[in-house]
Length: 229
Image (cartoon, rainbow, N blue to C red):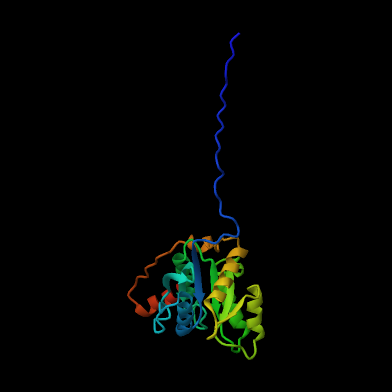
């Protein structure tokens, strides 16, 4: 009786490598929202460690600059007009779309540049309106940054800080980029490395309208009426 040999070949397929929840994305995308070109430029330049943003740039220009913060690759999207008091709803919509486009597929951190000055309920509503234009989950990715030590923090400002999980960074002469980077990374880790999902904003269809007619005043009136809605 002959014996036969059976050879068993075991193939080991290693599992697909997945990013663990505590791992950080290779590129950290940060959106700066403020009301002052000079202040936004100051913060953006502090993050990048160089004069990347011009303090005399037009306020309605959204800029994107890539660089490094310590040992991290970062991309800063700078919007110095979104928190201005006189900004229209149309400007908010267009600027938010531009910020989302420049931070595609979405920002990891949104930095609110606020000031320690008297604030009204309308100011808080405006800030909340801007933030919610990005996403309903925006506060999970947002922090507040001020550039001066407060003598007294208004209730309105404190309310905004609390909505941002009490994340508040005071940028002073003695501030270290390490401390700011740590706050950025804490936000990213809290969200398991995921960026803010702004799908509703990015999927908006841009509608181009042409108003025709011989009466210039009437055309201007109709154009303004459309933009207000």
